[in-house]
Length: 102
Image (cartoon, rainbow, N blue to C red; front, side, top):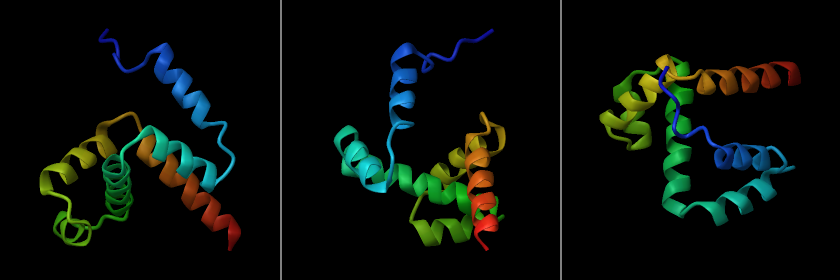
């Protein structure tokens, strides 16, 4: 079985630490210290692409709206459809929260 090299004690420590953040301000501050502005922007755009893919928005529209390359959109799509299910998990949770707030 192929081991996921990114699953380490250090990465788990990072993920557990992120779970301890309490609000948007704390999260912004932590990620700004951890990542460059460009990395944050890139992650945010990938997240936006995943949300658009979940709404079945065509690649051409995603490319126009986000400025992301078709290659990056295809990469996000591959992980969205055949990854570990993280994108869909969070999108489902967010949609459920929005549905309950109505």
